[in-house]
Image 1: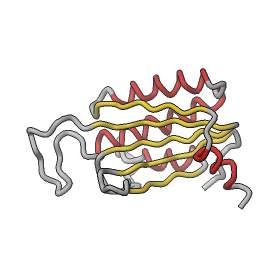
Image 2 (image 1 turned 45 degrees about the vertical axis):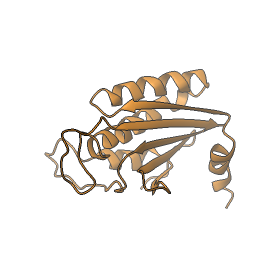
Image 3 (image 1 turned 180 degrees about the vertical axis):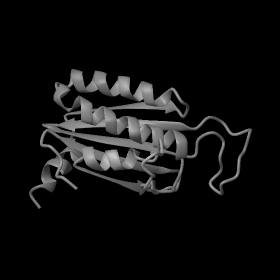
Length: 160
């Protein structure tokens, strides 16, 4: 129970918290990485930059590719008249912990894949698992999308 307390403090009363709304396109991951770098440096958490930026990049890329973007409907069809989707990145920090949250318009949970050794994609969630202390997902209460979250601390994650 004690190990959960620092994470709960990040959620309940973060020392720092900022959000960035992005249009879901191929520029979103780069903008999210820049935002994350600037916030963590400003908050004195530069030692968590590498892990946090990697996780943010993977989660934003997943949201851009699979989070209801590009005019795809929940039923899997395509609507060419659909407006651009948005992704919201929220960073919060308390002590040596950073919470990352990425919200998109899909209610479908992220599913880790098992790519072949010569595949160029499909490893993002494995990287998130390896670099975060914990991660998960929940659907918004109003059914408007989902939020994928991850936690990073100054202590290295446990090996999986």
